[in-house]
Image (tube, rainbow, N blue to C red; front, side, top):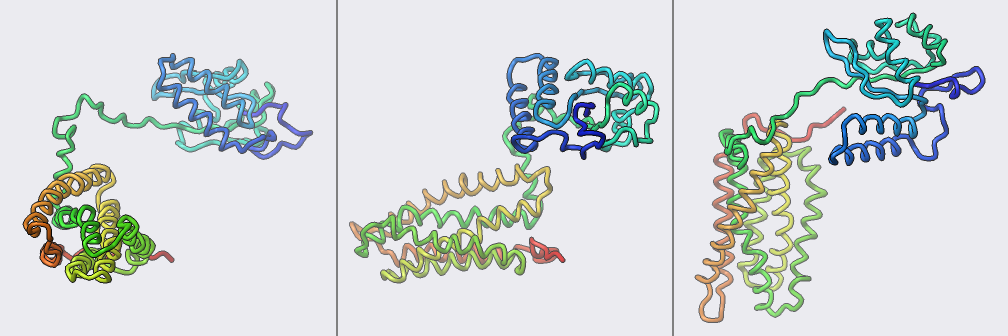
Length: 364
């Protein structure tokens, strides 16, 4: 609410500009709400917290008073907090007259903004009494009752462990995406421990620097992904990423300096087009209530199941391809290329294109 001290001459300023602020109101309000959130975490009385909040609102917003009223069906309004006696008096006046901006906001469910109370016709009796008491402008908004989430102690063990997310696998395409990324992660686990060893065998020094070539195509893939999502079906983006994975390992299997560096370079694009697309797929295709659990399940299957099998499996494969002190790199990388080829065949044969489309729609 705004009192007479905020009126310049006889002309009432627009709502929200009654005072000259040193910083923007949104920044100040953000600070106050952050302070309010921190206070809620401490062992302070709720009444004291609300009293402090309304006073701080008056300090940083262009108003002279603020109040909080609790309204329930069939009950009289309950005044929870007020910045001063005048604010409390205006809150009580609405109950006495059974009209006013708070009641109007409650019944309409919308914010009520009255920059000039003398011109307000929706609640004439309140306007007349409030004007005589010095009130000239009002802004009221309604906070509806929200459904309180179930407490953690009522969750089942299946929900606590996130096992309810496994129901997402009942959907055919969702299941294919989860399985494909998990299987693809298995051969990719060989990249980090064994590509540097191959570089050293071919006479490269500073292997970490050469490995960073993968980041170049990863960045290019990130920038290209928006266009691809806009113009390609998601199936072919996945297929392209898996195809890059096959070429990447096949080039490494050639066992030459140039081919190995080319294979390392393609690793970033392959990674982006499969794993980043999978995360975007879940965000776009999964019901909002399940998105967090879907992303968690994806991380578990890739970083947990896929990585565990990948590091153990590729470690076994590396030992099988190593004789005395020499590693048969063509066989090692060729076997991984064949594995990615199998993943691609699985994906193309099982993923259904029916009902599948571009994940970003053109506007306009």
